[in-house]
Length: 75
Image 1 (cartoon, one colour):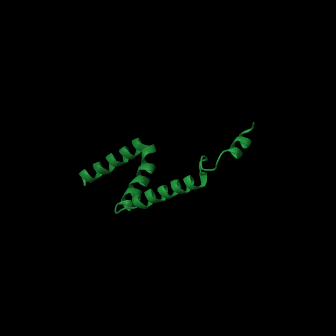
Image 2 (cartoon, rainbow, N blue to C red):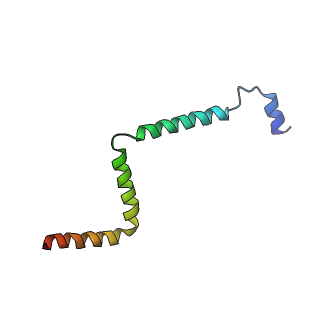
Image 3 (spheres, rainbow, N blue to C red):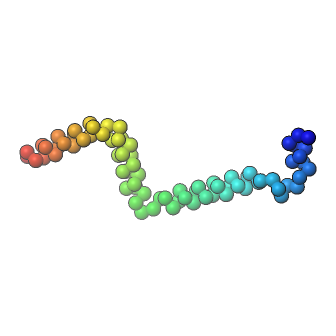
């Protein structure tokens, strides 16, 4: 007996309703996205983009910051 024949013989209440579970998961995801856009969303977004730009160049950024601080201390 194939899987399709077994599924045809069983009542539909036993089967997972993939459409409704996908819709529920999507609704949950959309709810999480809506909650994540709070008061500090723009600050968090700016910090995240700065982090993604600077983290691969940690040594270079540290050297530039040290030079800038040194120039400020001299001036």
